[in-house]
Length: 363
Figure 1: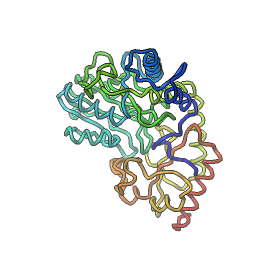
Figure 2: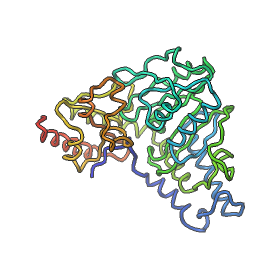
Figure 3: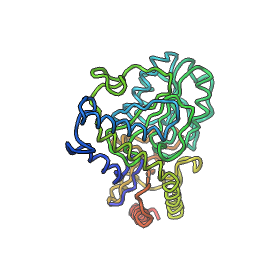
Figure 4: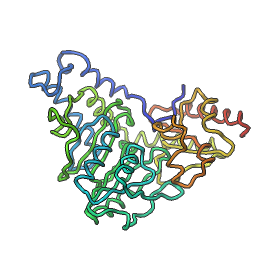
């Protein structure tokens, strides 16, 4: 299987796996399965590992904030939006191309939905749609088309109205610069070669959110429940590796982008070519049925859009928000690559997709 679905999830880094194993085995020196809330020696060691990981995750985020571990970015976004809306009750706004984890919250909060242009880029902030003393959600890198949004512009617009700016940085964390002026930032481990089941919410100092869960006062009193040292350690190791390899990973991704663009010249790019994270290629071809393409190129793992919505049969809300017709949206596929994708694998996978398109009469 050739894996080209890095937006859905990424392979676990060997370094992250090693970091996790220490806290799944034991008891023993330098590791063990102890509860980090326990006060004995093993518990204190586990708690220390959690704090090391917190610092590693925070190193890729702005200064002047706190990192709270969550079960993933979905939980972080829900927490930020619902608690943020209580702290700042003046209203909510968010982009029409937000991930479903944000968009469904925005809908429940009767938010103003902010438009994007035909290239998948947010339009300049409209002062009439930015709430006063509220919260604004603006993702950094779109998960379906890879476009990089002008988060800083929305942060300025939000701050001018005493509102908070929530940034879904899941697809950008460890890959592109994180906006320094966001107030709340959601990230996820499994998008940067860490384990599934853990993410984080970064909260700027001075911002008070309601606790997410009650019971044991874990996670600085904000999210009760036993913390997993293994998941935290895996997340931390993945973040540290991403920081170390930032330039090298970016160069590799850009090289693979060039290969893909040269190999598929007759396909139409969905979304702006710049600014864009180049590990995400969303393309369409007239006459192609994306679902059938996936079936015929079954040895290549790619998607039709968000992994969360691919099985629903619904047309991508991101492409529709960009003005792409339903027929073109159904002719679209998303390819994603990263650190562990080789050029040979990519070329082989792209050839398999081209061969599958020919079965549909598209050369």
